[in-house]
Image (cartoon, rainbow, N blue to C red; front, side, top):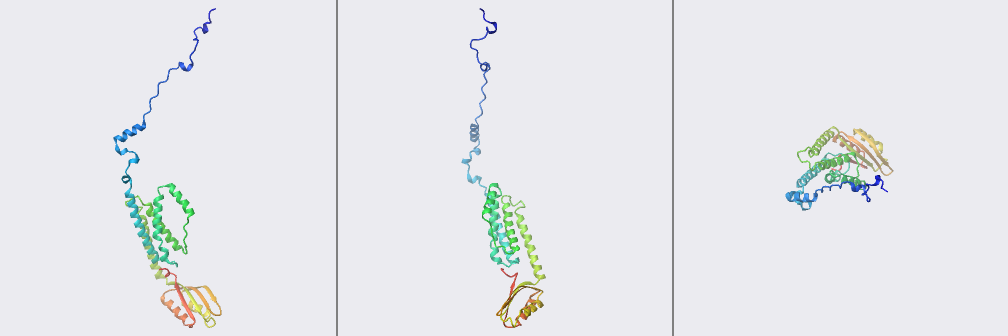
Length: 280
């Protein structure tokens, strides 16, 4: 019996389909990047790894010098602000003790701004630290707060100018602002002092209220002052104390009021406290 022609030419052990395909050409070898880097390093010594670099050659001494110069200028400006506050301030607190912190406040602000201005992570860490350690100061009058902001602004201005060089306008902005405000404060002090006399706290005490009563004291104060307001009155059988806030146009009016009050009797004492003269 002759085999079927359809299966006559079939091999008894057929090869798989994949084996019939042409073998793939081997892929080209990838270049050795490490070897290339080593060859470039041997050809050019400046491309040596960072471990062999000289620390003194990469340290930015110019930036450090610029920071030190601006720190000295910041301290001098804060010292001038301290003297300006003592002379031109009108607050009742002790201005000498309060203004002694301006130099440290300005310099520390400059240091912090210089450190965190180029790093977002440090700035976020500073926000977290300030949320824990809060700056608290006994602020009694708005003028004290204004001078504190001015001291902080001086530190911010110089801190933001580190690394920019003295040919840029940034280092001169705090100096120009401070000079402008200094001129304004001196002009205000001169014209305010010439236009108005003086504001005083007047304390009158009588050891014999039956002989020298509050009516006679108040009459003299109103006659010899530009403006007067009674702030407190304490009276008993043994003593009478009246506290006034008065305004005199000049030293002559003040002296006339004082002499008139003392002329009421020997049991009367007069105390004057100048609002602008405290804390110099």
